[in-house]
Length: 251
Image (tube, rainbow, N blue to C red; front, side):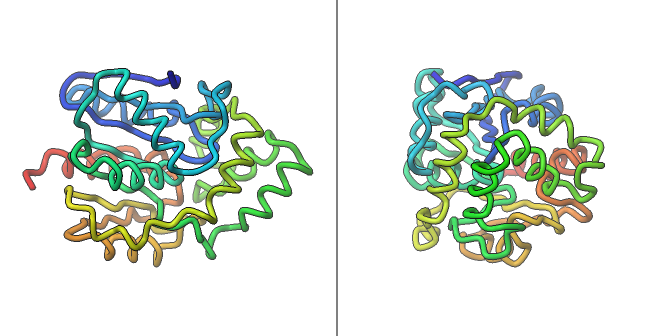
């Protein structure tokens, strides 16, 4: 079973971290939303507290690992928020298990692993991991997630939440990204969907976020001003308010 954090009472809400992240970086959301939701935040195979799990070969593998955990926990229906790579996992899950996902929140993510506007190519990141080591790469990549880079108040908190990732898992995900694309399946999504991101994201461009929202029937779009890739940490109160309003809305 994957390592996970669980807190709160109410309808199930799954929070899925992204590449080089961990469930711990959702603590501000768990604290704010736990009074109304039963929150489950898994660590994906090879990352953070699940570092000893076998590394994934595909995004679909990550989705299936996520679903295996929820099955073990007896959670049949849930709302699902996925950040970055976790948003890709969330999309795969929503497409493959549409009757189980009640509401979908796609946060700073895409329907394809082709990211021409990323701060560096996946191949460049891969080479840095091999050349400089995982710890150094994690520190530099995590800095790009914040508007103020490593000077951001929540930078160290975020970096600590992702510690423990295995090199094998990191390299496997970097290999998997370019081969994942579910863009042609977006019309299948019927659950209420929110697409949310910061307006200064260096990983997923604003144009790409807007395009993602346009691919999904009746999706809502929210761009948070002055935030980069980790808007949930840069502007936690605003992010939590938008997410809460979406989850509470009668669709």
